[in-house]
Length: 216
Image (cartoon, rainbow, N blue to C red; front, side, top):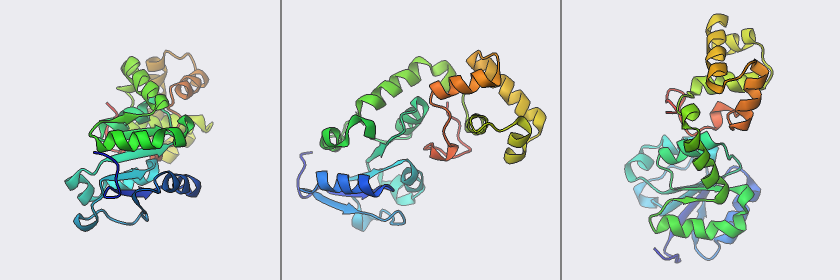
C-alpha cells in the first residue's frame, strides 16, 4: 500500500517530543494524534496505530482492536530481547527502537507495515535474534519471575520481596534458587548482573503482557 493522504494513521505516544517528531515526519499524510482514552471504533478505524509500550497494553484490551486487528507500530526505548519477543508474539506488526534514529526509520517502518510486512529496526531485530538464541532462558521466565528480578534489581531483601508480592519468604527463596540455577549464577548479586545483561531488570508493567500470561 503506497503512502497517500488517504491513509489514516493514529498516533498515541506518552512522550510529547516523540509525538511531535512523529507527527512532523508524517506531516504529508492523514495523521491524527489520539488521546490514550480514545477507543478505536469502526467509524474511526485507522490503517495504522503508532504507540509506545505503555499505551500498547491499554490498546490491546480494547475489544475493537481485537476485533479489527489494527496494525500497530511500537516506538520505544526498550530493547529487551524478551520484550521484543513478546511484542511480536502478541501480533504487533512493527517495533522501532528510538536509539535507531526515528527520522531515518519511521517512513520505512510505516510503509512496510502498510504493505503487510512486519518491521523491526536494527536494534529490535538483534534483540529478537538474541531472544531465540537464548530461548532456553527466555522461554522459562514468567511475569512472576520478572517481578522478583525487578525487586532484586532494586536491592530489595528477600523478606521485602515476599511482603510486596504477598508470598512467603520460603517461596521467594525457592524462586531465587530456581533463577540462580537457570542463569548458572553462584549468588543473587551475580543473578542480578546476568539478568541486567539479558534485559530482564525492567518494571513488569512495561511488558506487553498481562501478569497472568506466561512468557513462553
